[in-house]
Image 1 (tube, rainbow, N blue to C red):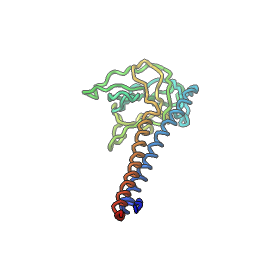
Image 2: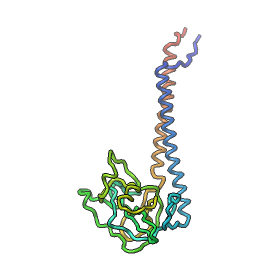
Image 3: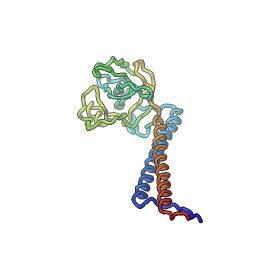
Image 4: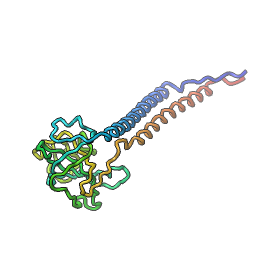
Length: 250
């Protein structure tokens, strides 16, 4: 007579370790899915807002509700205050060259302060980062159109204090409030990511809002795959233990 082999838990410690691994990997997988959904949802929101007419920034003191909206501002650039943000790849995500993001304050024509304009991307000299190609800045009053951002895009800087970079042409990051104090002029609480062409030769093919969503989906699949592999491993170890401890068939 053959005795049926029943699955046995592989042991308290291995089983507990497996449960922890499964819980953590599932949590990380869900987090990655959430990040992907956030990016795709923001891309859909931007697409809907892009179909609307641009809002005139003018002297709106409370411009924060305009974040992600298409906006328009008329004024003159303060070229002497131009800042170059270092270590920025080409915005469309397909170019690995390092470069600068060009930031210039725009004095609003109605005297309502200034708005910081993210004008575009400039390639960096591979041998000497301080050797900067000329960037023509339009003179006189112009109209700039683009998207309102909540802040200047940041990059990770290890231990770098933005205040220590005050007065420098080339910087890693810029904080709106700190920069307003530095130049001694009020700034609207948004950054205008320029889309219109002003003949300055800067690249303005900004990265789409959903860039990286596919990467997050890939990471989620890896985490869920690791969780599934752990379940399979526990099952295999349990069957092996059951066969090892089963009484010999007669």
